[in-house]
Image (cartoon, rainbow, N blue to C red):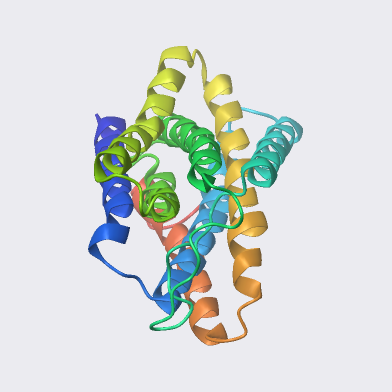
Length: 255
């Protein structure tokens, strides 16, 4: 039941992100602050939630090995498909437009493929964390990270598709929105034990770490302006990931 609600909300968030380029123009600063916040949230969720929960049913060595596997897979996906073109279609200032493509006639195709694989991993992370954690709100930290990150993914695809026919953009956006729930469903059908869920959780934690440290934050470190805003947003994301620990377990302290 909880996982189903999470998946519905993730689908809605993804659809909203994909619709933004045709309905709302985001400024460069607002987008970068959002990216910094999401990077902090994903970093905190991976280290404070996913890895500790995975280690409850796996040895520390096994947990780290699975996490390294997830990190490496996501690293090579990012290298292969060059996704998270957050500047595409966004202003570099309050009124300047960025180019939509960089030398490829159909850049959105590679981005869509890479982000779809990434989204399927998000689904595995969401399902495994919800199954592995206990309390009134299991998997809440992972859910928040996926929920807030998914509009950015859909936005990256939609921004690169500006100029394409509207029905095509809507169809791609709709299909992408359901990849995460599909990944969650396939994992639930194949999950057979706590050890399997924990291995998947550690694997997904490695992917989250790679996205945060190897994809989102390096993009932000080159911005010499708004350093205070971006740093504050990053710390806020980590702080919320820590605060969610109390909600997930319904207790007044963290073990």
